[in-house]
Image 1 (cartoon, helix red, strand yellow):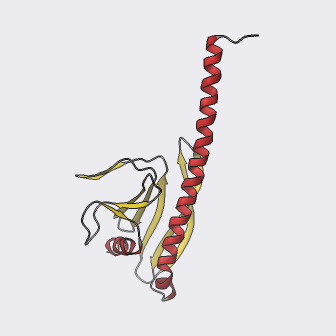
Image 2 (cartoon, helix red, strand yellow):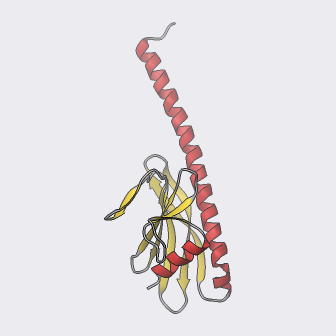
Image 3 (tube, one colour):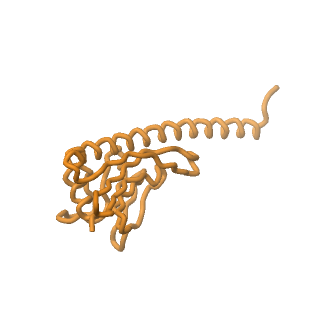
Length: 165
């Protein structure tokens, strides 16, 4: 029996949704993989400081909920500084965050995926993933011009120093 035009439209729409859901699962898996790589890189940068007892590195997991992906676990890392009560955490906020206005004159768009690097005092530096899956600090960093900076060992050290009161 032949299908009606409406039924054909419904079939096309359901197939498109199934394809989009499949792509969403691929995107989420890539996001989590990129997060794991970022956290592992941060841990490797901090290893010498940890070995000297200057800080403690604590990897963890955070439950994140996004309408598009439901609830999932994402990797995190926190740094505590013995005897000071200070800490800095690196926590994902979500894959589907594609931009933000961070301060007057500082906004970001065209990126997908946000991670916050925050201190006990509430100061925060935002890290976004650019379209090429590279991590970028967005906002001012001491001693650097511009508002977007590739995340590397030097910019991470600058960010960490800035977040420590």
